Length: 162
Ligand SMILES: [Zn+2]
Image (tube, rainbow, N blue to C red; front, top):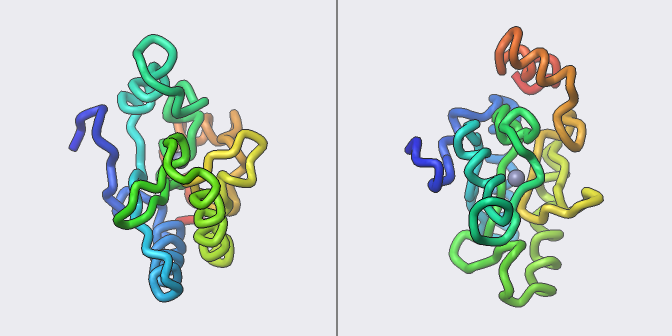
């Protein structure tokens, strides 16, 4: 569970209101013939550092622009990455790219309806990424300061996600 190469899918580590939102969105996706699952939720500092190294100091494609867990909302339990429940629908892969983009946009509509923002709308698109709608695109210095001084629950409270 704490291996850096393994995504954490424990929804109990997410902010409570964000968790409720994504569970509602997943259910709505399922009833609209869009089966999805969470590939990754909360991300530890050690895993974020390992992912950041990929494509930089370790072989592979670059998968994140965030050097530390406090520069990604995953590190606060306020972001998840959503993928097809059974098929290999990934943003960085080579499979049916255009079809996948249209599929992700359909999925994202249900997450947006439930109060999330979609990484596909970012200036550097991150197609499977969904985060709490009250979050700025990336964590601000203020969010990092609150996390360090008061803990993650204070950040959740400030963003009405507690
Ligand atoms: Zn993400």
